[in-house]
Amino acid sequence: MATVIRVYGAMLIPGMLQTEAYAREVLSSGSSPKSDEERDRLLVTRLERARILDNFDSPLMWAVIDEAALRRRIGTRQTMCEQLRHIVRLGESRRIRVHVLPFSGGYHALLEGVVSLMWFKDLPPVAYVEGLNTGRVWELPQKVKQCQVDYDHALGDALSHRKSLAMIRSIAEDYEHAAP
Image 1: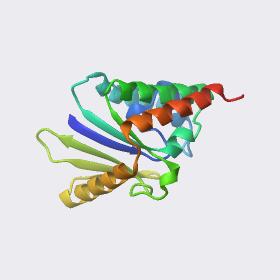
Image 2: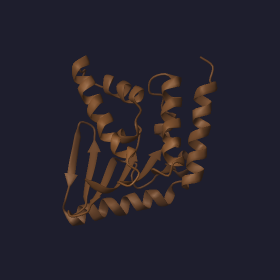
Image 3: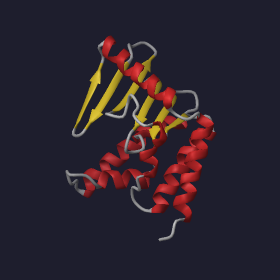
């Protein structure tokens, strides 16, 4: 139902941008083991949610991704290479705007957490803030506004869309050509 989505990925690629192999690896890991059935159910839900990106008209999406999420290997080198190329394809198709927060930028406004901001046609905006084993939806206008301000500050510290895609391409090539 959202018309605009802005996400920040700190240590992981945001869920809506994850490939099946990457998401399977993420959902298979962690401190709370899941049965294969539960993992597969969560995987199907995550991939179904991402299908909104198949519709070019809605929603508009920005993804700010920390360089750490691009360089932290989740799964195999091939999994990472495919994951990063998937993001590049989405960015090149103008389906999403991608901005990388490089290590060289140091501290930034979103470094301490993960946030998703969503705007709707007939509802007020919301912010979803996530931490270890916790998540909270904020509807209070002042909380949503503060999350938006923090997101905007981090976006201002990030690379441009074009430079971000070039960096992601380069990191994907590193994964592809790295020695086993």
